Structures are given as C-alpha cells and as structure tokens.
Amino acid sequence: MGSRNTVLFFAAIALFAFLHFPSQTEATIPTELVSKVCAQTVNLSYETCVKFLMANPKSLLVNNLKAVAENALDMARRETDDTSSFFAALLKREDINPASKAALENCSSLFKQAVTFLNLNGLSGGTATLDVHSALDKAEECKSELSAANVSIKSVAEKLEEWRNFYSIASAAVRVVENPEN
Image (tube, rainbow, N blue to C red; front, top):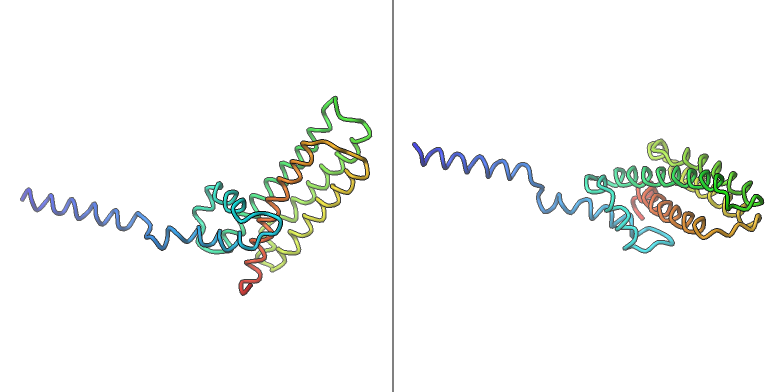
C-alpha cells in the first residue's frame, strides 16, 4: 500500500505542476505582444519601450493586444496625472521666477485636461488614437507656453521627456489595436 500512495502522491504533484505552470507558448505571449507594440513606437527606442512596459507587473499578465493597450494607457494616464502634480508642486517653490508661474500653472491645468483623454473608452469606440493625440496636443500647448514665457528649468524638460516616453508607448499600443493589419 505504501508504494501505491507514493505513486499517487507524485502523480498528484505532476498534475498540479502541469496545470499551474504556464507552457512555453503561454510564457512568451506577453513578450510577443509587447514586442509588437514597441516595434511601432515613434521617438522612442524599441529597448526603452520594452523596458518601460515590462517593468509594470500588469504587462506580464496580458494575453492580447487590447490588454497591452489598456496597460499602456493606464501607465500614460498615471504619468500624466503625475506631470500635472509636478507642475503644481513647482508653483509652491520659492525659487521659481514669478514670471514663469502663469505658464507653470497653465501646464498643470493642461495635463489635468490631458488625463481625460487617456481612457479606455476610446479603445471600445475606436477613437483611442484620436484621444491619445488630443493628450499630446495638451502637452504641446504646455511646451509652447513654457517657451513663450522663457521658462528654462531642467527638471521641467526632463519631466516632459519622461511624459513623452509614456505617450509614445500608449500611442503605439492604440495604433496596433485600431490598425491590426499594420
């Protein structure tokens, strides 16, 4: 009886392992999907795109392109909200030139508006590419206002570049979903 129980025990472990560990094909699905999106990014290297997406644990759980796009939009939305808060925090600093404050305040407001364009509704309605581009328009408007006010703050340029990276990934993801044949 003892050897029979041992065999059943090992058979149960083998069955458990078979059912709970992903196959080689399943394990490569997120990587393949991320790769497809990152191949479409503009103004961002493929490697940087993969690094950004794979750093987010949600990217390891995706099983279709729409899930990748949802994740990318969520990341871009959070970064856009952070960027709005970044500009709002700059306004509270004592060392900021008063002449720059109006442009910084407008940028905070513009990024708050941009958050509304980075939503999942566009994916369902087929307008995500337009919505994401509208978020870019808000960022470009901010950049123009900063330039017109002669705002030259290194951390602002770095934050806008960081936002642009997240935008590029979200834009590529929604393009892949909305135009799967490309």
